[in-house]
Amino acid sequence: MRAVGYKRREESGWIKWGRELLDLIFPPAAKCAGCGRVLAPGEELLCRGCREAISLLTEPTCGRCGRPLTHPGLCAHCRKEEWAFVRAWPAAIYREPLREILHSFKYGRETRLAPFLAGLVVARLKAASGVPATPLVVPVPLDPGRLSERGFNQAELLAREVAHAFGWPLAIGLLRRTRPTRPQAELAAEERRENVAHVFQARTEAAGKVIVLIDDIFTTGATADSASAALLAAGARKVYVATVAVASSHPHPHQRGADGILAEPAV
Ligand SMILES: [Zn+2]
Ligand SMILES: [Zn+2]
Image (cartoon, protein in one colour):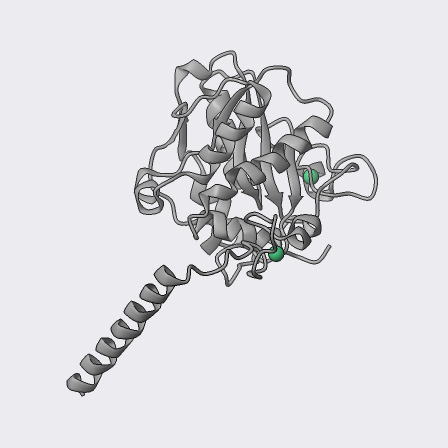
């Protein structure tokens, strides 16, 4: 049995080697990070169809969490919930093709997507009312273990682009995680708040500052809320949140996603 296993490994090694050699001679056509289709001439990273299919958020949205609403005001969840942040501005709804694009960005190491994804956040902030004049831009940090595993913090790449686009100051390292946490994606909504409670600590330089906190996805809001609370505890005046995506409605407390993120509930 051992010999068979060895042989099989050997063959797959040759196949892999052959494929790599072929890729060198005939480079594979660039594919869309959203749908995987071969890109047409003039298209870069994403096909036109995927760019146009992203569900961008426009008003009316909830005045606290930024989720889509049919009329101005607060969503049912935010009428009960106290958030440490003033307002969140997600740019788009977390559904295909954005879901796959964010997955490529974060887990497929497609960091070249950062300017495009940050562009969605910039457009949302430009269209929103009540955005502070010159806030300090702060990315939600990763814990050091996960950072060295992934090689980059996706929120930091986005924050750099957003700060650059507006000419706003950027503060990397203002906020840090005090302990590793389980990936939020593995947890049900009710466990997420517990998982990230008191996990962030902000430096005293946050004192007196108005901050825009940047992250890739707003699902239950537990991470954004905990990070905002740490910034306020360090003396920040106000914290706002801007993300690329948001789950279209507040996840059910027991809902757990099979693919590493909470499933998106039907609107
Ligand atoms: Zn596509
Ligand atoms: Zn809300």
